[in-house]
Length: 205
Image (cartoon, rainbow, N blue to C red; front, side, top):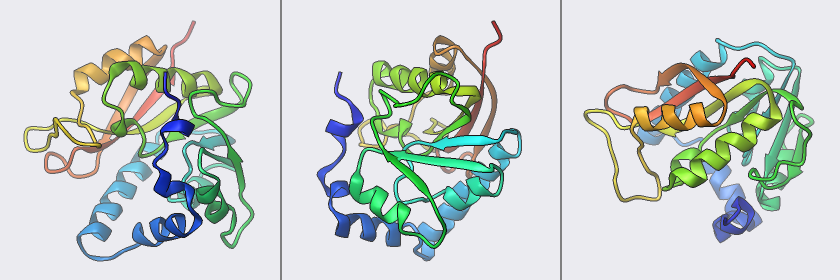
């Protein structure tokens, strides 16, 4: 199976591109409105959970870092791009950013109360990769995971794109196979946008 470190687009491995990416996510206009809606959905999702520690993987340049720090005393970022991590670590407050592969996380089981996986799941176009991702981050989480997906709605779906929409029923099956229970789904702008944040808890044994 191809891991995320090998599959990471080359543009994200260069420092100047990582800096451009960080600037792009702060733009105004339509992109800015979309970002506000996306973060609003994430805030609603995070309101449902409690814990002392969270792993942000992949953390990128820190798109959601401040939001996570509002709720968790300990935040650790992980990414497969050293260039993205350089930007992530270079912000005004201290950040712990580690280089690693999300399919082979360098942590023991249950190392964090929660794992947040933002803006990655929707890039995978096979259930094999999606399930592998969910299992990997679930293993590292003590309580559960929060992940971003593009879910098919009556007005929003993509069949051929590097960002793929997936039927919610299909995602629920993968969540169950990963040993998780879907607790809530928070859409950014139902039904006009497919963006959604899913909160899943570890299944009791």
